[in-house]
Length: 200
Image (tube, rainbow, N blue to C red; front, side, top):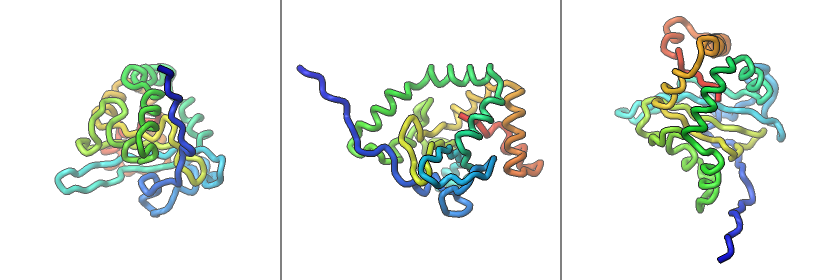
C-alpha cells in the first residue's frame, strides 16, 4: 500500500488572538519590551510570553507578567545566560518532548489552527492547563500574525519548578535583573515573582 502524502495546510498563521495580546491595553503588543522597536510590520519576528495565575476555586485567571520581545533582543538575552544553563534546559526539553512530532500531530487535526489544542496541556509533563495553579504560555509572532511552528505552547507549574533547578546562579541573576529592569518591581513583588521568568 502506498504511503499517504504528508498533510498540507494552506496557512500556518492567523491574526494574533486576544490571548497573546496585551492584557494592559487590550490590543496587540506594539513594541519590543527591550529596544522599543515596532513589531506590527510583516516580516518582524517576536516572542510573546505570559505568566498566568489560575484561581481555580474562583474560576479566575490573573496575568502575573506579560511582554513581547523582538527576536534580536531575545537572542541577545539568551546569549547572556550561562552555557551550562542553556545546555541543561535544552537536554531537559529533548528528554521530554519531540517538538517535530508534536507539531505534525497538531497540524494533522481537523482544525489545525485551533489555539486551545496547542495550549491545552503542558508541553513537558502533559498536565492539563486547567489543573495548573500557575502556568506560562509562549508564542512566536510575525507582525500582525501568530505563527504555528514549534510554538505556541504552555509550560505548567510543575515543569517550571523542574526547570528552575537547572538554572545556574549566574543565569538566575540575569533573569532577575531583567524582571527588575523592565517591570520595576517593588521588594514585596520581587519576592513573589522570584524564579518566575524562564526564557525559552
